[in-house]
View (spheres, one colour):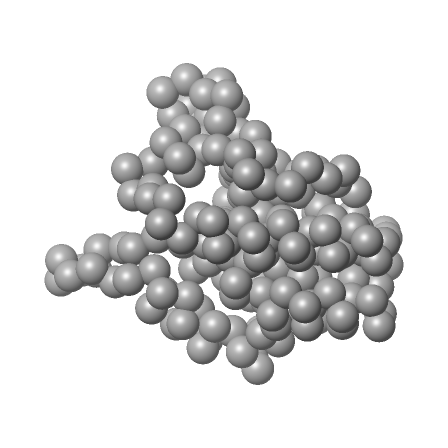
Length: 186
């Protein structure tokens, strides 16, 4: 089964958001980089997706004019099979990624990137609904603590657990980095 790794929103924009902390960044980058390197070594295409939105002013972290819509420092350098820019949560909305995947005969996606519960989860659900088989590599996703409606903090680890819980068996197969690489190479 032809597989493709999707690397979603791993970009410098996040360093310029008020919620950014580097606490989980080293572990995430180790997992993300191992996933990329493992896929590249096995000839699995790796697609890069950036998030960009207006207004086109340097003060907005996700504006192309900011200069931050570029690979996150610490991400392994790789030659993307294709690069897409999105302005919505799902990497499959308005980008042409779905067309590219279909044209290249891709049947399984490996989803990774930033943020776990937003663009990675949304893309996973959308891809599943469109008929792709999805491996979701929780360790190769990153998020940060969020404030709940009652003002309490929801820890990033709890967000990752919740995302894994709602995706597993419904929208995706949860995979470790090595499991995703092995399945892609099979």
